[in-house]
Image (cartoon, rainbow, N blue to C red):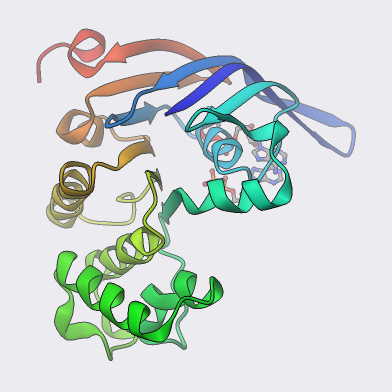
Length: 232
Ligand code: ADP
Ligand code: ADP
């Protein structure tokens, strides 16, 4: 579903270059819940931004759903981006919009028919357990509820892949557990492949089937969670 071949990324700021990724190789299969773990600065966010095509690799090749990202024209790129949803540590909700409007936003931007938006958002809010919050604003919700909104919004355009960037790092352990349960349900019921980055081992052990360990721009270990970390 996602492959990276010899992918490197070097940032140049003033006179300093940072090799954020050093010839990374990774293969994420359809249906995986794939975790990438490492300390701050290891290169995890850079990896996610490359897969989402928010940034370009310095060298190497990335394919998503069989397509080479570097070879896509703007139209195809927009299509493939619809296949990728993303959730964030800080949720990134629009504070001045209702929960319904937040979830509807990707569909509004894609000029989706109003009736379809109404049905789809209603279904998604029910799926994430927030059917009664449609008219609320983000400031009225807890952190866990905000992340549920983030998940519903990410699912609006029916992606095949969900990228999770430290999605539970701002949440307490109990809320983290409930969000991880929801992500598992997203994977099982919608068949969505999940790429999750975290600095927390417990998150990997709770929901991932595969893991890559990153350190200073390198993948130092990868495989099934059991083979890398042993039995929990
Ligand atoms: P992680 O997500 O594991 O914390 P990042 O991918 O954010 O790691 O960062 C990897 C390295 O690249 C760090 O040294 C970071 O400072 C650097 N870096 C990340 N983004 C940029 C950027 N936009 N410009 C310059 N350096 C960056
Ligand atoms: P994250 O690791 O999730 O990217 P950070 O707080 O490290 O979070 O970075 C916030 C933003 O700043 C990111 O969008 C990243 O591109 C940028 N950034 C990260 N490290 C650097 C850096 N060393 N120099 C410039 N920009 C950076």
